[in-house]
Length: 250
Image 1 (cartoon, rainbow, N blue to C red):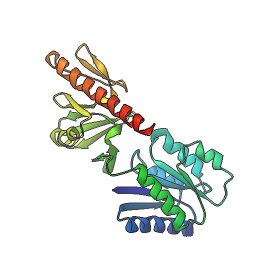
Image 2: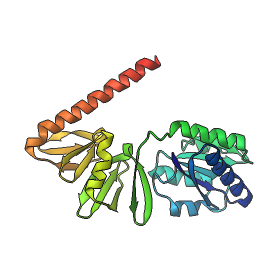
Image 3: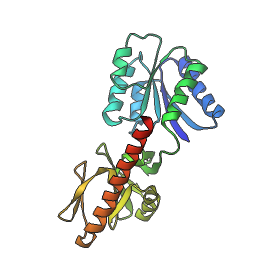
Image 4: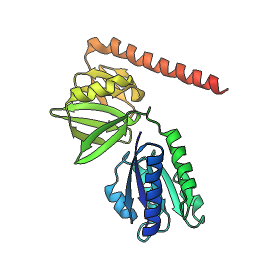
């Protein structure tokens, strides 16, 4: 499992301590953990894009933007990144959890507490969750398959659209993207050069595949029956899995 972690703290000692403990966790658990350290929230946001970090550790009290303000900015575009607030006071705990904070770390950070938080993250983020890696605007990016709505060929490029309404263009042969994504089972090629995530398909009408985010793609009339059958079978199998999981929990 590969994890990208951001640590933000304007106290150099606290920043080095927490970053070091997270790196040690990766070594002890035999995980590939990449830690990026920032002394200001503004520095993180300049570097930030959705899905880049698995976990962001935020000091609440910082010069410039506070941790609460940084978390607010992150949550506007990224609902899934784990946010952990670190502080020497619990005064803003209620504010912190308005932004769906994953946990709260009291300073000084200890190995026991950091390991507990990171182990909990690992239980929720396992290597069975596939991600699609690519480069966009010279930045390396990873998007979970579950977040991808559609992938479309654009001559020598591929456009990747996510559920938040973002579209990323990367220099990649469509055949390479197709080879990776079709193995997952949730992606369907509705026409030449277009893959859609069946989780986001609303339906097929008038030779157009309509998606939840408002996107639509045309397809040939002769493929309608085949596409609808594949999509319906996918939905039915998903409902069956949910029912089985619910039965096991009862």
